Length: 163
Image 1 (cartoon, rainbow, N blue to C red):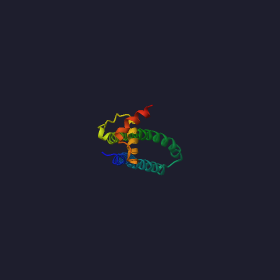
Image 2 (cartoon, helix red, strand yellow):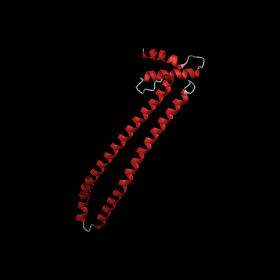
Image 3 (cartoon, rainbow, N blue to C red):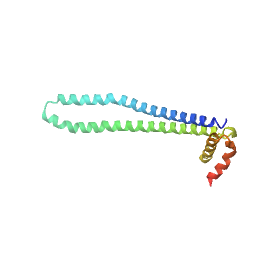
Image 4 (tube, rainbow, N blue to C red):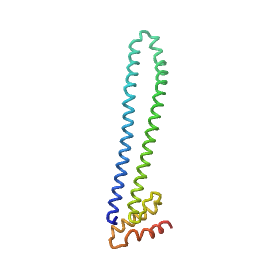
């Protein structure tokens, strides 16, 4: 890999990361929409049955007890809905977090491979300062073709940044 193609490969890696994160966010949004589609009709039916109850009451005493009955019925139903919502939220956020971690790890491997390229340093455990130093030297090499090859300047820059 030449010094001129390193920025292109880094841009490709960044775009892949952005696309991966975008897909994860879309999947998360889709899960929320599916949850709303499942629970929406239930809630509409509950409201309809309450309206029917109001319409069928024939006395003032029945109407007077409806708010208390409705409160306890709603409290019980909403507790179940809240638990289901929390479970959905936790599962969705866990999947999103794991997907994002995987996307970032893949991106790190790609960047390490691009920056390590000819030296064979495609290890994602390479410290970020080394990766940054290699990236900086690669960009400088492209900006000034008369300078030394990035592989020759990277160790010197990495040690200079460490101090």
